[in-house]
Length: 351
Image (cartoon, rainbow, N blue to C red; front, side, top):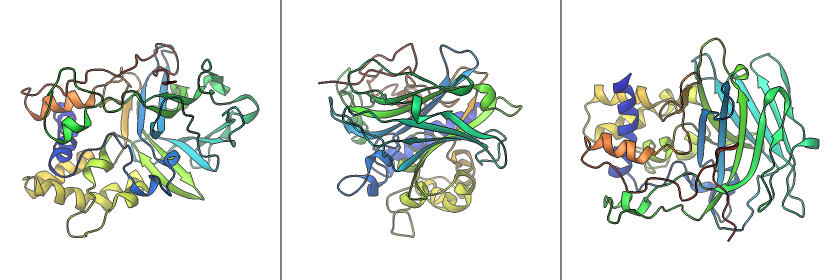
């Protein structure tokens, strides 16, 4: 198990350095979603899944969108889209529980109504968790609106400080800790977040182990998806070997259960390019695919067991990659403190 965790952290970092310019988590990994012409409200930036500090038998799921939103700007959810948390609770890489969220059009005060349905697959119970009549987003600058849904579910939706912290220029240039502390590329910028706190009884099926990913849907089609940070950004090159065309869009439109069959060869070739023999590259690919954030709900979340906002993925990866010779990118924490109350995120920048 320790070796599996080591590989899952080390290989994405090595690929980011050696193959493509690093972006961040999944920020703007799909060029078709970036302006002009794209919809950043459909571009998933990060997925978090962690044990609730307030509820000992609850898990918090967070999805962020709308990268690099300037302070004081409200970036809405797409009212025509579906925002989905997918949960696999039997280990087959297929969704067994989904939380499907839709938003109304933006009102004059930047408010949007929220509706969430929980679906059990394939033929289980379906029902509203939160109705539009009593669920809404938080208007930028007001006290946080915490929506109480059915069965103990709590919901927040609105602007927050981007919880991802990272020295992107230093990382891309392999110039770590040129200053200490180094500049957080995402300091001062906001994102739009959907956070739900869910009793574990609604997620698990006998075992405490679940898999989590997020997806966005528009016009009946999946637009983006994400589980672990950086998988598409790092493992699926912009110009895959032997194809000459990006597979990133296809990856975003795919499903975890077909990741190994659809993208395994590309990942193996990339790993081989980095100096791994074919057998090792195949074994590593089996570790890194499918793109699902795994979590044991009975254990404290710490990447790779889930992912909490304060987890310093970059430092963990650097230490493993260099055998401790490089321990940090010198960005040790988010620019805004994380709250100790739901949704456990940092306050949005207002100016």
